Picture (cartoon, rainbow, N blue to C red):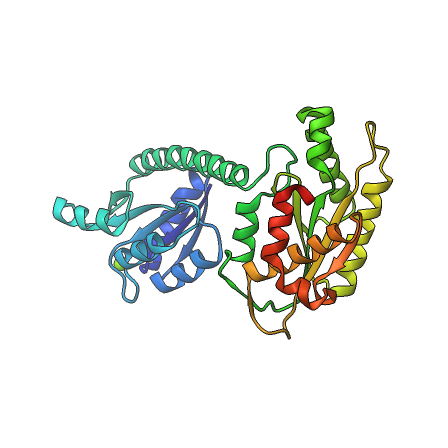
Length: 319
Ligand SMILES: [Mg+2]
């Protein structure tokens, strides 16, 4: 495997490097702690053999820096040292070393320690992969496979995060019309099928880089990076038409849309304000007859201020 050797005595480093090559590994030698740190920060080095005593960044400091990083794969660090007293080893362990090899390094001992390192790194890689899968699952809606509200907030930086993006993005909110009555008439399994199909229509009508979210029930949010008002409206209307035109087996299904835009030039707003603006536009689409798209900029004044009343009407079954 790839092994980074950090050794300031070039002859010692070269000897170690040749031993590792002989054992079937791919060693790379750097002759200072600072150079090692620079490389570790830029590239993925899972297994590191480092000298303890070095002029600039010593082995202990290198260990501390590596362990202080967050969200990076685990690095297995073996310290090379002449110090054999347990008090020194304890210091090394505290700094983050996994193992020690006494100088001069014997080949058999080295091979043994590397076998242990490889085993631990394999277990670690397996754990990291499982964690990544769990993380993805925690951000996914199981019914539709789209992202969920948690993932939306992770991406946007949380409800209270200030929005002033470097490039604009359009935010589309949509809600399936009369979904409750669909569920009541045909049952929840049929309702779930509608949700899955709508998700599929949204997927095929957007780019892989767009974020599609089922925020709850029959509500969805789409983030369209790089798109302004016009493009956002065009995409929303295309999706609206695609849903209405789909060959629904039990009865026609439509959805109402609201569009808003986060712009680098607009005054800063909170993520929650942005979601609310799209939601207000969506309510306006519901009030004006459903199966339509409204932009938050074109809402009548009283409508923009009437969120609370709209929510009450929605609660009374207007959706
Ligand atoms: Mg040294």
